[in-house]
Length: 279
Image (cartoon, rainbow, N blue to C red; front, top):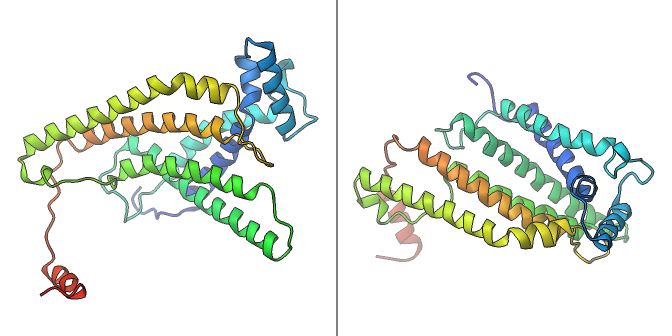
């Protein structure tokens, strides 16, 4: 990575390509569900099939192997891991990012790059809606729901990136005054708590999320009617598992590192005191 600069074209192309394929696959999840694990209930199978047919992008494209998923669905599905690997290889850690990264952190960094692109996409959708509503006077039926949908993924994916960057909120009043061996014990306890919480939520919500939401392909119930409940809720559980794994990776990576030391800037403290009128 020496000599390379962050913000290269690869750091834009591969996350963008991954998001396009991921968006295509998410929109066509019912096709994969009907082909791979069709519902046992005939009524539910007809319901999901009707939803897929109504939302299918390529209405006249026949499915492969006599199923519902067509050639483009499988191309997008198979391309996703390829773009992830290419994106991970293209990443150069920026100066403002956490410097003590490890090889396994590349996935979280890639998700962070994809999240930044989702922010740009969300902003573009909002600007397009403003233009259509106030200039053309022809507001869309999908911009608001699409913005909410992307924002949900942005919120979730940024949690994984924040965990890798160690920029989540921490209260270190007790942590900072104890010796290093006790700090390591605290690190182990906090990682175990994160893992136990993730396991508990996944165990308690698996059926509700993956069976009642994703498998039944629950829609949002608006004019655009995106599958926000069917996709966001499973993504919550997936991200929680990834955050727990990243917390474990952080524990391993930081085990032998010297603890951070914070120096109080007396000039900054004095400036703050003056700004609030303190003596």
